[in-house]
Amino acid sequence: MKALWRRLLLPCSLLSPLLLGSCDEGGGCGGSVGSSDVCPPPISGYALVQGQALRNDGSPIADKQAYVGCGDAVGAYDDRTDHQGHFEMRPVYAVDDTLLYPFPPRHADGSFDVSCQAHLQVAHDLVIRKDSLMVRFAPTREAVVPTTTELREREP
Image (cartoon, rainbow, N blue to C red; front, side, top):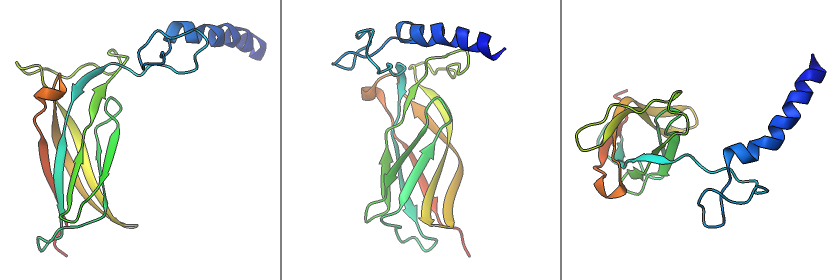
């Protein structure tokens, strides 16, 4: 059985660059057959997540890592908070396989919402988490409407 598997694997490994395509020097797809880069999936949506991290007394949490994760189609993004606790991330929605990751329903303007999670790493063992955050993705960068959130420390 292993010999059959190896015989099937070799032709597939030789054909994969032809089937998957590759990137050219300018970042576009369709480069030379010998290229080792595989093109990224096309971008179907752009978003902007802006927020502020605050202690329970309202003071900003500065110089900590904030994260936004939106599943496999978007991935996770991060940014360090500034002196006022602000952070900003620009996630993109990009998928190759729309059967595995079907597009979310679109609004009339072409935008769509994706459920995400945001959290802030305050210390090694202390995380501030916002369980659900709906992020609006727009079809172009120019049409992006920011999604804002607040990550606030809970009362002791």
